[in-house]
Length: 287
Image 1: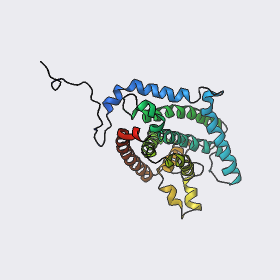
Image 2 (image 1 turned 120 degrees about the vertical axis):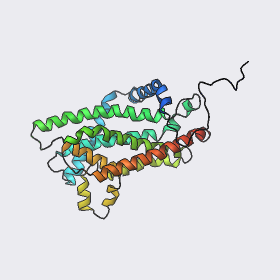
Image 3 (image 1 turned 45 degrees about the vertical axis):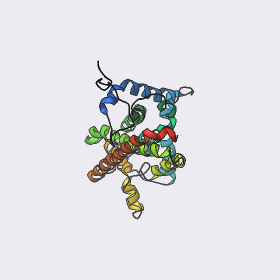
Image 4 (image 1 turned 180 degrees about the vertical axis):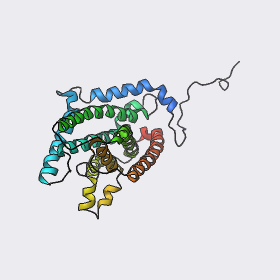
């Protein structure tokens, strides 16, 4: 007669996990759930709105137009031979992906507490679904950018795509992983320190102004050399600057900046996974 000790368990659900536990096999097993969360994130956001998915287009377009009027027409920030509107649209589209990934991921535990408390599945599925769903939204905005790009090329604008654009998907992946790492850290801390919830929106807005979204990185070095280091130590600024170099042929490409960004991203992601895994064991008692 077999005893329970002799039986082989198919799955074991336990609060005891390794310090770093990124079980790709288990995530793959729950891929259908991941797709359902992605569908939820895409469909439900604008489900009961009049314009629906058009908001994906309206927000970056109006923001780019506002930035063009304020920073380029009034503040006289030069964008070289690149049309200011296209310059701003590129920066805003890329920044918007990072912004959505970070802010949505930072609320993972609180917004999904009811689901987490009832059924087991790898908790990392939720932040991963946010990264993927926002990637779909970014793809829509990228199509709009391409449409305006073609318009300006037809009108003889001095812009060109650099050959390094083949690495553009890797750059966006890097941006998503950075947002994922920071978001998981903030989400874990919010379960104990609720004040962080109110600081996230404010902090992200401040971060945008030091991420070279509406100005070239070289301009900050020229005009404000004493505080340019704030932007230069910001990995998001290097991603946006490199993206504009690839898409518009403007700005600078820095191997140091890219390697620095890759290093910072994986360090943040590493600690994000550790803190996220530790928090998921006990968060239900504090949320």
